[in-house]
Every structure is written in C-alpha cells, then in structure tokens.
Length: 447
Ligand SMILES: Cc1ncc(COP(=O)(O)O)c(C=O)c1O
Image (tube, rainbow, N blue to C red):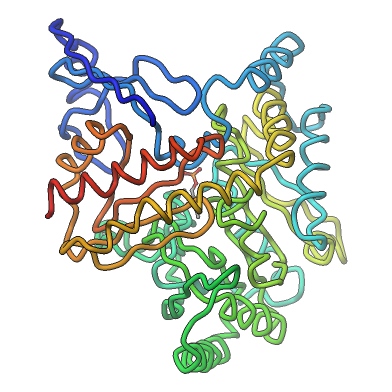
C-alpha cells in the first residue's frame, strides 16, 4: 500500500502569494484559484505545498501532462542530459547537424510505421502540428493543386493551441469566437462511434459505424476540391474527452484519403509510445498515415521536443520539379540536450513498455470498478495507460483536486472528466492508489 504523507507547515507560502496575479497558468484567468507549489519530484512522487501550508507527498497521476513516463529524476535520463551538457547544450540546426539529432531521427524512423522515413524536429507538439499542416499544403501545391487549402478534422479532436492547430481543434469549450478568422475554417467531421475493449480488440456498434462511414464519405467527396488533408488523433481523442473510437473509422479515413488524394495526418502526440496499449495508436487500425506527429512521452518529460515524420512520397513531392524547402525552422529545432534525453527515453521505453502499460491497465480497471456504482458517474473508460471517469455533470475541480490529494494522487480533472495517465514506472500498488483516489474524490465531492 502506498504511504500518503500529509503534513502542516505553518510558515506562509510566499511563492504562491508572489505567483498570484503575476503569472498566468494554462487555461485560467490571471487570478485563478491558488496553484500548489512543487517542492520536489522524485520517481512517481510529487512533493506539493498548498497555499495554506499543507504539504502533500503524492503520486503523480498526470505524468506532467503525459510526458514523464519514466518518473522524475531518472538516473539514466539525468546522466544522458548531463553528458550532453558537457559537450554542447545548443547549436542552431540550419547548416549544422549533430549526433543526438541524427540518432533520434533513426530511432523514430525505426519505431514508427514503416512508410514514415523522414523527420522534422519541432519544439512542441503544437508546432509539430503546424509543420504537418504546412507540409500537407506544400505537398498539394507541389502536386499542382494549390487551391486545396483546408483541412478536415474530427469533432472532439484536439491538436494544440497555436493558430493552425487551433483551427483543426474542435472549439468544444465555446471560446473560439474571440479567435475567429485567425485560423482557416476546418471541415469538422462527426465524432466517430465509441469503441470498447473486448479482450484485446476494440469493438463498436456496426450500424453506427456504417452510418458514420457513409456520412464522412459524402462530406469528403463533396469538399475534396478545397481540402489538403485530414488530421485525426487515431482511436483515442485525449484533451477532447479521453474518448475511444472505432479503429474501423481510422481505416475508412485511410481508404478515403487515398482515393481522394488527401494527405492523412495522425496526431500521436498524446497516444504515441505505448499510451493506448499499442506502441502507436495507429496499430489498432493497422494503417499508416502520410504524416505523423509525436511529442510528450518522447521527451521523458525533460525538455520540450516534438517531431513530425512523413513518407518519402510526401517528402519528395515537394522537390519534384524544383527543389522546394519545407518552410519552417525554429531557433531551438533539434536542441541537442532534448534530443540526447529523448534518445535515452526511447531506449528505456522499448525495453519494457508493454508489460508495464498492461499492468497499469489491469490495476486501473480493477480500482475503477467501484466508480460504476456512483450516482455521479456516467461511464468509466480504460485503455492501456489511460483511464477516465466521465461524470454526468461538470467536475468541481478545486474540490476534487483537493480530495484526490488527500487520498494520495495528483490529478487535474477537466470539464466532466476525472482521468489519469500514470507514469509507466508506477507499480500496481501505486497505480491502485491513483485509481482509488479518483473514485474516493468523486464520491466525496459529487456523491
Ligand atoms: C493530441 C495532441 N496534439 C497536440 C498537442 C499539443 O502539444 P503541446 O502542448 O506540446 O504543444 C497535445 C497536447 O495536449 C495533444 O494532446
């Protein structure tokens, strides 16, 4: 059993006081409910201090937004970054290259679906999505179809917060009016039918599937002349609601994009590197995209880095008649420290991700069974290293966060969801503590 530590510290929390009204936190007003101060992070634990001085030693159920898969302060990752620090920490990538970047590109090409052979390094997931969208537009233009400019995306999808990525993200939170006109209007395809794990397969209702495929076929055929491509998170929509959908929909999109000369982009920034129980979520559908974006777990949670991969057909089309550059080049592209730590993170990952993720899936499935009995719970979903409890109401976020901390886990609920994506190094006991904290926090706050 994981030992939860809660202690009182009577001295005033000056960091939180200085923070308030000075710095913005993600998706919050400047004067938001006080955050927790991080006093330390080691293994799967976070040492937190609240504004009233309460100290919590808890398990990180969020893997720091799904990136810290090997835990905090991993000695092998620390050594990799320190070693690179002793050589050089940053160089521009224009006209220069270095071993950590080349090795990482080789590893990524080796791990991702076989047709993906070329790599562009970006400094965050959103930027990787921007680059993917730009490459798809350049591909269509180089193919003599410059009028194909828009993208199709799924209702419920999330692809990042930069303007291009925002344009293909479902404006589900209803705040997008402020930004109207900043990004091109996407063609939003209906949300695919939900899917459920049955043994090791994802199944969904046949009739709903058939309807979805025929509606989407009609929409894409109707709009094909304007469209450059289709972007989706395969099988699992993350920030859009931890929603699992039918692999058959991914296969249908592959068939349609091929038939209509559209570029198919898989955003595997959240799902990649084992999170759904397959190394890439695309494997559930058994298809490969033209372009894929990866990030988050790639970094081991150390330094911001993401990548876009594409097929030779896409890469070489750009230069078919005249050599054309891919028009992007951030200052911190392929940062050597980030690449060095990502290389080691991938080596750790490939050693044992599968049994670890399977053990997490098993422990969460067991711990969350109790949630199904709660009145406030609409649905419980578990797939690989992701578990979500969907409520039939909005979550009281500060109250559930506080109750979960007292039960031993750091969680960050949103909308009507309490969810976890634990670090892969969580033991079954630690994972069970996260699961129990989710259930007891909902029971305490929402009944
Ligand atoms: C599927 C997906 N795409 C893109 C992003 C954006 O990545 P980043 O926050 O690194 O910009 C996220 C982040 O949550 C994501 O889940």
